Structures are given as structure tokens and as C-alpha cells.
Image (cartoon, rainbow, N blue to C red; front, side):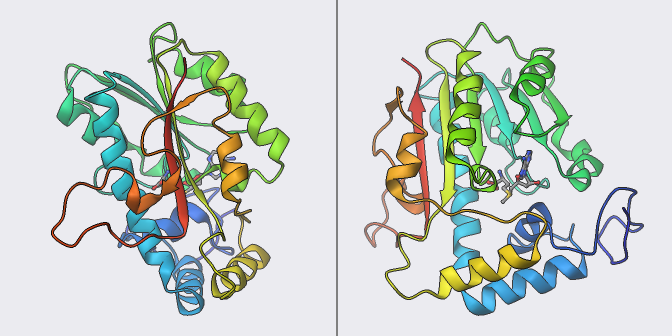
Length: 275
Ligand SMILES: C[S@@+](CC[C@H](N)C(=O)[O-])C[C@H]1O[C@@H](n2cnc3c(N)ncnc32)[C@H](O)[C@@H]1O
């Protein structure tokens, strides 16, 4: 269904619903992008007015992506990435970080938002030595994702499965763990799982974040379920969590600064290896 509004892409493409805010477009706005509509900008500003910390969460998530992918291409020696819930292209997309470190890296992006498909060209500018593909698919259908990803990735060799900012859209815990199990089953030991996930654990009774979250859930196309540390840890069951384990997104291998550790943001992240 097409609606009205304006984004940098001009005409509203068919199938893009501009009557309700979508997470990919709101995230794009929070990161300073232009691929969003009035309804997304209004929702983002409303969220920000209620909980200003949301902007730092979006930036911390993106910065973590860069550090995690550099770790994976470097220390972990990974050359294949399956990035599900890619979002709209922005700075330092997975293939750009990975291929800067290891040009032969192969990346498959997956998202179910039709606007991400419209902008997918920016995700396909692979290095000559590597490869990139984009699949429009739903995380809830891992079998289809794996089958199609197999055209670009060699699933007999280690793959980093990236689930950044997406598992909180799968509300049922058993469904979420089942999806992760199915994805990990298909890849060999030495593969990695990378997760970022929203949480209210840092809200410390202030409730501003919880209220903003409820407000978003009542109005958006993608209601979310923030999870506790214990629940997010369950996603890594059976895997070896890489140091420093499951931490706030700013605290995962942040690098030295003269000011000590960065402040925590209200989002967890972790990287783990399949033994
Ligand atoms: C908050 S954005 C995160 C973008 C990026 N991974 C990052 O961390 O910067 C969430 C993305 O997940 C996508 N998404 C949500 N539910 C999905 C599903 N069931 N299947 C595929 N993609 C989904 C949305 O369209 C959106 O692009």
C-alpha cells in the first residue's frame, strides 16, 4: 500500500506504507538519514521527546556493528556475513567495514521492509574480490533465508550471523530461540552469532524509556519487546561468548580513551562463537 509523504527517493514506491511509522525508516532518521517519511520523523521525534537516550542507542548500535565486524574479519578470521534486519543503507554498512579489512568478504543482507529493497543498490557495491547480495525475506522464515543465502555464501564454511536490532520484533521467546537454532544449525563450528537487543534494564525505575516504548508499540508497524539480560543471554545458549560477554553496546571493546569507559546505553550486545 502506498501512502503520502516525502523521502529523498522522491516518489513513494509501491508497497511502501507511509501511514504508520516503520522501524527501518525511523532508525534511518535517528542516524541522520533522509530515507524516511513524515510519519517516521514524527514518531522518532515523539520517542526522542519522551526518551532522549534513543539517539545514543541508535549511534551506539551502529558503532558496535563496526567494531564487531572488524573483530570478526580480524581476530576471528570470518569472511562470510549474513546480516538479517539490515536496515536502510547508512554509513559503514557491514560489507563496507568487512571488505575494508578483508576485500574477499562475502555478505548477504536480508530485510523485510520494501523501502530497504528500493535502496538496496547501495548495499550491493561489493569489492571486486568479494560479493554482496540482498534478499527480501522475513526472519521468521529462516529456511528460505538459508536457501537463498546459499547462492552467495558457502554454508560449509564459517559465517557470522548478524541479528542487530531485530530480535526484539519477534515477541515470542520460543520462536526467537527456534529461529536462532535453525540458523546456527546450518553453519559449521567457527561461525559466530552477533546480537544487539533493546532492554529496559537500564531504565532504573525512571520509566521514561518504558513509556516511550509503549507509545511506539501502540502506533508503529513494528512493535518491540525489550528483554532482560537473562533473556538475551539465552539467545547465546550453547555458544562461547567472546570477551567482554553480554554488555551495553558502548562497552563492547570500545578502545582506549583518556576519559575511561564510555557511558552505558540501554541496549545489549554480544558476539559468540559456535564451538
Ligand atoms: C532497528 S533496525 C536495525 C538496522 C540495523 N541492523 C542496525 O542495527 O543498525 C531493524 C530492521 O529490522 C527489520 N526487520 C524487522 N522485523 C523483521 C523481520 N521479521 N524480518 C526481516 N527484517 C525485519 C526492519 O525492517 C529494520 O530494517
